[in-house]
Image 1 (cartoon, rainbow, N blue to C red):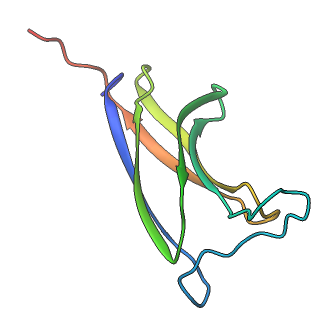
Image 2 (tube, rainbow, N blue to C red):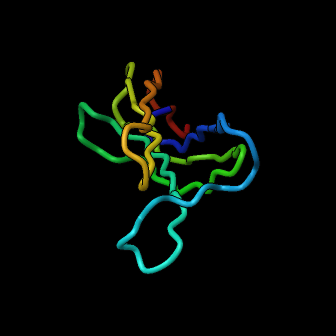
Length: 107
């Protein structure tokens, strides 16, 4: 219902041999630079950010993003972005369809 909290559970899996998280090539970084992954839920039409979470991804990970449902009833198309802060070209986007109903009165 409009304005309520909702949770999106995301399961991630790496297509790679081994379980160790690879270090990135960052010659100007002062130490070891591990890759960082971000999950972001946004509404492109409203230009709004609904949830953001940093994820450490070894071989696999499962995480939950909590956010408030848009306040206007109807069908909303949100976007789940999966972005890396270390590698170019591996960011991904997924559309999430959300049907929002009107909030019920407390009476």
